Image (cartoon, rainbow, N blue to C red; front, side, top):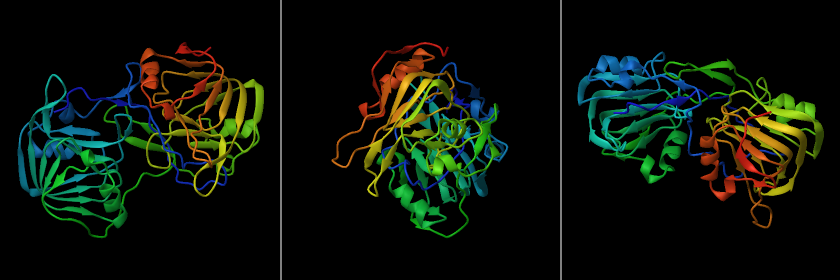
Length: 374
């Protein structure tokens, strides 16, 4: 079981939008290290922290007021009962819910796996994962983001509420698809997906509550030439995505990226789009925002394809900071640029950034080092 898994209290507002100018299309990149010592963490439900051999305790842990992670300490036989997983939760820095069916060793590898036997398991929480062990019984998936971790297995049928959910599962890497002894099929039912809007994550358990459910602001949807509009969109009351349609010169001003948001794919994300693209998602033009400095407080912020002229300060709350670099019409890699210094608040953040693929890094003309925001 997992005794030390924690979550970053940095989750977010999600929007699925169509842009006229700068919006997705490039490969999304994010830092692999999703937690830091300095990041706020959410405590798991007691039954998850210590694990349980009780079906009733496990069931309470997966209720809407439970916790993102719940674990078993031995085989549990509840063949006449239904386990329902409900609610929206954040764990490991993403929308997540996990059933841990194993005992973890000193090297964090499973020493032993367990079997949960149920009449059926009904998944209504986005981002649900069966980790390492076996669920014996049919599993009904009514939410986005279902997957396995490690040697996860279903000894029974895997039934999705829509063809889209089934297609998304089939597109997963082999390591996330686990194994299923029965059929993988569709039985139409209601689907729970992540909604757009600013959120807060509970300190205990990691439950996500919406501060507001909203679409993107006009300045994000259509892009803007005005610094004030971009700053408003990237503020804590803004939207997950802000875009520019021209170079913006605000050399005497600070751009602060604030708040916690879910992106268009239902994961923690904040994006500054500084480019236009064609119908093939190829970058056709890039833009530069000139500012006194840029302060990044939002987790998993990316600056896409264009440039920032000025120093960029990544505060300790902004885990997962990276670039998003696409390709141009000739198939050449585009690299977002920071014409200035790139400062991280902690060494852990800098180390995580340095481990990123080249396509998720910036062309930095100045220093890249640890330094707190001024």
